[in-house]
Image (tube, rainbow, N blue to C red; front, side, top):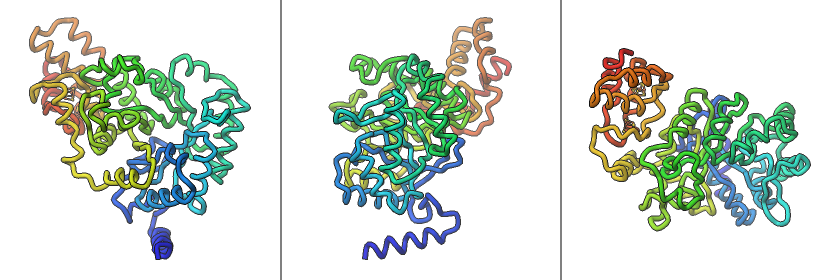
Length: 406
Ligand code: SF4
Ligand code: SF4
């Protein structure tokens, strides 16, 4: 009966105009553009880690529920043959329903998944990926983890990168991406002009790391700042304005830390919905990739589709953390990015200084040097709902224009 239902559902989907990889007519899943790639991806998507622990029947069941629910994006970083074969088996006959972000530069050796830049290993690892998935291409070829500026530099003009471009030329990957936990690397990649997708670690805690801090460093996680690190703001703004997609990893803080009061670096537990809503509030984010170990976890994650606005609201908790009065700007940057690129927090900071200390030539010079000015505000209010402090941002922009003259 279940098979008959699936067959019938698939037939209806095929008949529906414009229905290809999305099941939007059958589910409440929402879709977002994957940057400039022309692909539309589900707001929540599948991380591959759990497939290693499943048998093929469980993998098939999980994939069926995910596809029927409208999920159409999967990240496959893991070189473990069992992970890849399980996913390949689960996608048999419906490869075209799933957009695959597969990693280049991973190999399974000595019984474990490893990162590699060795060209022979890289080639072998990628060919194994295609073969086990039963496909001759993937949509996003993700350069696996570059986590320092030195690693980014080493990539340039390397045989590894030549191979990545060769794969694109041959149509074995349709788009080039990179994964990183390092903001500086992600920003350099965004500005490279040839990276279309960045898999980046983003969540309520990592965004508050001090510049350059490593999210796995316990001390760094104990010294989070109030607002978002300015380099992260620059990354998110750049990606938004240049249509470079961010696919989010570590949505729940890495290993689900943010969901557990005892482990949460912010001292309290957040709900999965708050964590997802936080990331999706940034226009550059295409999808949150969620680690899913079994069907129960998948079903819990799919609750996202039916979450109320109240359940998604993370701003009250941010406000409590940062203990400010409504209406006062804390320069935290949670409202970023502005639809036209205005650096809202910086302008509010300069405006507040000019109001309390008087407009000095130095303040005016700092204002003039900004890439965009308050006078460009279109009153669109896209930023307003992202401010946890109820700041009337359009009014602030009007005031700043008056004070600074543009
Ligand atoms: S209201 Fe003004 S400041 Fe806010 S996003 Fe729109 S243009 Fe930017
Ligand atoms: S306007 Fe709100 S969100 Fe934006 S920087 Fe100020 S307090 Fe933070």
